[in-house]
Length: 145
Image 1 (spheres, rainbow, N blue to C red):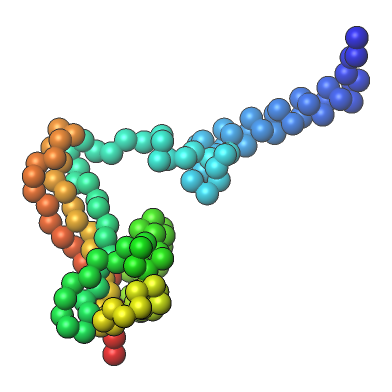
Image 2: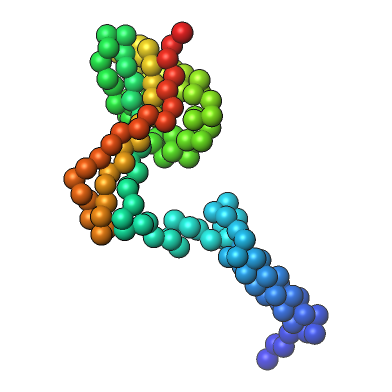
């Protein structure tokens, strides 16, 4: 039978205590970026059963005035990437010119975009059920000079 030495047990106890302290501290004060020692709020919280649900989309207007939905297929940019950088786009809407450039690169032959915007559709929710109402809010917009 192999027994741990006193030093081996001390190291294991210290590692367990350190991990426990990190988990407790992360749980109380952490943010998603601290995962696995912080909470992953996506799974630890629930939405307000009477709060509006957020649905983000990116759309552009081409030089003919047509509205174009910007998707991963026609731009190479996933919606999650836009949502993850949403605050930066709101703070600096000129960054949306990069979305227009990606659209031009991934959609050869398509009319160039003269503007790109991030639109949030707020879907009404009451008692955790859709109400059938919604409203759109443009939170960032870039227009070609």
